[in-house]
Image (cartoon, rainbow, N blue to C red):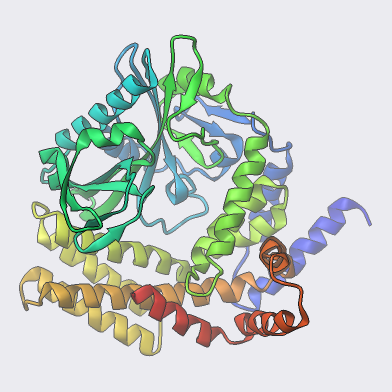
Length: 483
């Protein structure tokens, strides 16, 4: 059978399978997207530049990028992006995650940026000091206004076990600084014996680790609040010209769209340090996350679908990727955005005192409308009732305690996650290829089990219950997540 006819037949089978569960796939658009994806082989050097829009990135990323709203993205970038300092700090700011896949992710939640920051310094120690100063200065400059509120900065790595706010923080965990700790330049914790310990901002210089800044931003013209993050990939360029990642690994660029054409020289310099095996490493990391989010107690099939889409589009499994991208275009996929908006509502209440409460109330109203439009049954009633109580508290109609607020947020979040899981799980299993792929990448776990007959029998039962007893699995997930 000619390849073209075989491909068309396979697409028809996928379309029919999707329609059985109400997934409407536009055949003409699907074929065009498959043709675009198949036009050339994917490799680490596939950099593409859109001169008209002034953006660049991996060519597969640009295929999914929707330039509508680029002015808004650049406006927020002015708040969250780190500044360059000639001869010392070089940056390249990009969109990442769902925000960079506007043609696929019709209902993105948060707005995630990713910034490459190259520090030119005589020593690594000096580079760590510089990035610490730059991050704190950015935090202080964007601490609070009627348009934004800094929430936290991740900077540094704990080298010992500590207790903070009654919770144990294990060694090698990232150090999370809230807004007030950033402003005062230190945090107070306890060692395991209960002795008070003061950790200064400069502590992060020992091991910067995971560097990230988070804000909640109020978009006045759109009348909404959104959680915005900027994840940093920091490198040190020494006098010899060698470039060394401060966290030990230079991240690949398979899911980013860079929004400043002027940063191309830095990006090109950093790209020279990426090797072809970075694609394999990236896919392996995504597969690890798929395994994690299909485990009992950690189920999140919305995240599974997102990661499978990125795996399939980069490994030549384009028909499977085509099917998954259609799942995010269905109205029920809006539930994923609802989950993020609940997080934003919570952050706005707790951290953004300067933001207009009417905006948060309107956001709660939008959540209620979306739930009513999409859902039916007891889950809808429970979520809507909880959101009405949250909205009444925001506008001052009623007053609830902080504990009650947290309980309502948790219950709403868990109910929405359950609905998201049900939606994506039921549709991912339509395609046998997807089910087989998930089973294949989970096999290493099975191989590690003892091979005795006594161990094999329970293992088989567990596998069976994952597929056939969905409700039981979700209940376990709810209990663990609530803890």
